[in-house]
Image (cartoon, rainbow, N blue to C red; front, side):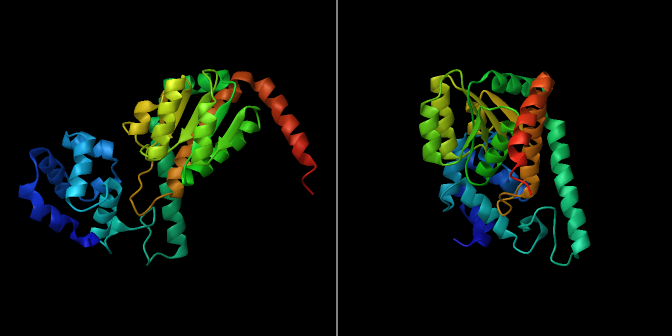
Amino acid sequence: MAYGDVFTRINREYYQLTGAEKKIADYILLQRQECQFMSISEMAEVAEVAEATVSRFCRRLGYKGYSAFKLAVAGAGAGQRLTNPLYGEIDAEDNVGEMCRKLCAADVDAITQTLAMIDPAAVTAAADMLVAADRVLCMGLGGSAILAKEAAHLFSTAMPNFYSVDDSHLQAIRAALLSQRDAILYFSYSGSTRDMVDLLKMARERGVGTILITRFPKSPGAALADIVLECGAKEGPLQMGSVAARMAQLYLTDVLFNEICRRDMEGCRARRRLVADALSDKHL
């Protein structure tokens, strides 16, 4: 199905939709721009229906799932500002200076949004969990795996028990061998990937503490995590892996790292000095 057909298709099928599906259609037709930034959980909430109803609605229109439907919504307005595949409202007519200013504003805005969303109690609880853990596995999939590696690298400069695992099979293997004395720090912008949900279910069954950094606090992953840290920055379906969204998540990582280190400043300083000495010979 052509992307541009999505709204025409909704109107054509409208009177064949169930009552619950019509509620979804009504919201989408009124909020064409906003809906492409929403998770399936948020769509279900605003339309006051179940997530399964949203999935069924998308399939009725001929799409494989909600992600494919959002992509169709974004493509329906091709050439308009709302479908811009670049973050920060970058236009083809912008010069380099204008592009730089817009990107700076977008990145700063993402961090500012995240600051406003921070729950100090959640940060404290997350730090408590990480400090008490024998092992902490930092995980993510796709672009989020890069963030997990960055987190593991940062924490490893002050603590010896942080490890990154980026392959989904290895994640399952490592999680299966964790105990209640261990913890998982998981990165997922959407909070809605299948492998992540399966892993968090396994962790819950084994009594492993879990922390999720995500944009969507009502996502399936957030429902399974013990602690949720919410990041700012909206991404359209054509803007996946935007730098602004990653900066928001890295900011939360930095918050967690500094909260842990400030509890033992002397110990942190000593361990970082040992790391610095070990790395000194690797520099010219």
